[in-house]
Structures are given as structure tokens and as C-alpha cells.
Amino acid sequence: MAVGVIATLKIQEGKNADFEEAFLGLAAKVKANEAGCNFYELHVSKSDPQEYKVLEQYASEADLAAHGQTDYFKEANMAMASLVAAAPHVEVLDSVE
Amino acid sequence: MAVGVIATLKIQEGKNADFEEAFLGLAAKVKANEAGCNFYELHVSKSDPQEYKVLEQYASEADLAAHGQTDYFKEANMAMASLVAAAPHVEVLDSVE
Image (cartoon, rainbow over all chains, first blue to last red):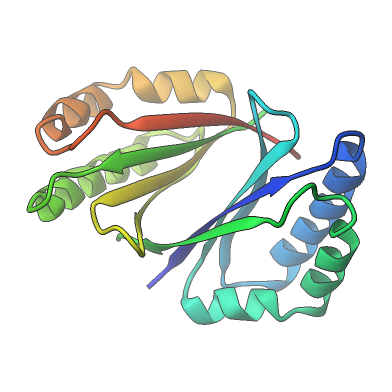
């Protein structure tokens, strides 16, 4: 069964461009390497420019787990740690098909 | 610019099967008819079986507006009105590309 993810990230003021560059680099690697990722799309709130939401879906729980274990994900997370204003909030959802 | 949507729907207890059937029928029509819809995927919370979240993305604001004006969307919304426990919460997000 597919799984969805809504990841909410609060970014420090003044760090938006750095964050977007880092995240979009990560997203490109996800799309190039993870056949089990159905979508992985960065969005920003219309009311709070510091609040980003990533809409994600994976073909299975195993594909989600594999995503989190990639070297490029771990590296991007470390790079983005200095840009976030708070710990990310990650909600995992069951797909209904 | 693409736009994302997170639609949160609280469904009355005992109405899950009716809701899922109605929503998946709608989703099939969206996918068959809306070239400007990038994804339209129903999910359910892991902690609250009455809480559903639809992850959506459209190629443009115009595509999102057109989605809401289709006869099948209006009909599905009317059919689902008797199944929801509260008014849906719809968050529209700007895509970052």
C-alpha cells in the first residue's frame, strides 16, 4: 500500500534562498534515483513565507524507509539543519486506493 | 506556477466506506479529465480513522479553479456533504520549483 507524507518545515528568516536551493537539489536526486517515490514536491504557505510543506508519496512503507536511508537525504538533512527554525514535523499517512 | 492543495476531511463514524467509494469515483474522473492536475491522492490518518487528507497539485491556479467548476466535482461535493462531520479544511500552497 502506498504511503503519503506531509513534511512541514519552518525556515529561519533570511535563509529561504539557501533552503530552497538545498531542498530542490535533494528533490532532483530523489526523482532521479527513487522509482518508489510517486511524488516529492516542495510548496510554501501563502500566509507564512517561512513555512514550507513537502507533499510526498511512496509506493510502499519500504520505499519511504529506503528514502530516509539514502546518503543524499542524510547529507541534505545535515545541511538544512542550520536553516530550520524548529524541528520538522513529519506526518505519515496511509494511501486510500 | 503550480499550486498544491492539502484538503482535510473529517468523516462521520460509520460513513468511511461510503465516503471512500464516493471520493475514489471523483478521483478517477479528475485523473481522466484534468490534464492540469499533477496528482490527486486520498490518504487517511494513521492515528484518526475519521480524518482524511487529499494531497493535490495543479499546473496552475487556473487548473485548480477549473477543477472546482467541473460538474463531477460539484456533484461529488453534494453527495459527500451528508458524510462529513465538519466543513472540509482546504489549504492552498504555492509550488517551489
